[in-house]
Length: 163
Image (cartoon, rainbow, N blue to C red; front, top):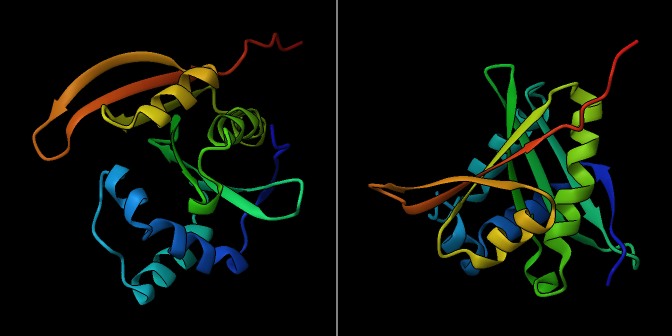
């Protein structure tokens, strides 16, 4: 198995995230599946990097190559929703579960939040397996009128007693 390390995203990651986001297989699994124009992506990325309610981690493999991104969007100041995207050329190497399981403790530590939610399409079997392998528990499934079947997961921070 490849050994993945994480680092916080920088503006230098904008083009890679754009390419990964607009990959046809990726778009098929995203809730928002349309192609995003480059200028729109750049604008969104700049704004997202300055947003204190967003945290991005870039996965880097043992060759020093970027292999994916994990984004945490803090909602209502209380919990975060996680989004994961494995670089198209790195799929099938069991990187997704590593990205998730390594980034969540960093998120908990950096933000002091205790709850992460995840949602994926029911047909996205790779994501469902990745979240389960990373320790997420399935909460429920529902049918979204525009997105189809959705699976919701949760991960709670480990309990730590404060002195």
